[in-house]
Image 1 (cartoon, rainbow, N blue to C red):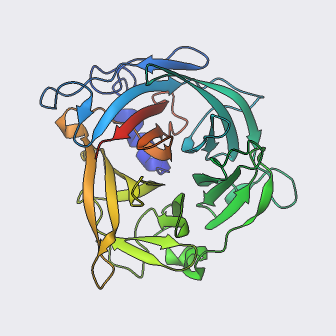
Image 2 (image 1 turned 90 degrees about the horizontal axis):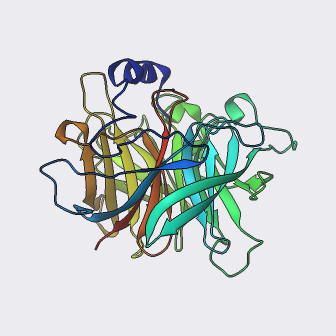
Length: 339
């Protein structure tokens, strides 16, 4: 999640650019559900729908209309239930959204929000204060043929924890994570904690801090498994590049979504990067491959992308957080990693 100061700068400097551009995500949504975006490339990019190692497969913008009396705002992560063909999303405000996607000829065309509920705590009451603030979302039991046993795994930044939920937003229990990740003093500040989470078929729940922990080098990021295993990697060299989402690639590597924004005179850079878990040295520093880099100084008009989920195969969906700003929207982009 971006800070309020950053949001203020974005609103002042980029007013009218984020919503109505002729570059990458280029339309103004007006409908209650979603609007298609035309995805165009900067002049010096590859032709067609291929860019670096991804193939773009459609973009839409979600409306901010209310569902069940709850606003559709600050969508911070997504999770796909393949058994029921249902998409789930979480909001920084502690909401859980249920969505249905419409695809046509393999392209993302529409997303309909069918339900919205407040996440409940152990006491079965809506989460409040620092206990709220969900940022990372993943899902288990989502492709086993059983339509009734999906379980959501949610990381919370405000209180540095990972919890288990059912798809109705009801608390099921916690996920044990390394002790240092549960302590606020471990992080560079309270807004740079557990922003992301995924589930690996071999290593279980994997998470990461938005920025490296205070005890670590600023130049080395780390993935943490629930069982204590760690993998280090170098983040994008853009200033303040932060981990905002994690997913698992078909070969077992980790797909990392990074966002870099350090001030009004700095570019906004969104990076999709492959952390190669089987190519790590004795210090557990792993090889990294850049899958796609979207740099606002090179013609891309990108937004505050924070969420990522795997659909099928190497096809993924990412989403941006609108920061509750009238100048931004929740934008979904479907893409396929080409390897």
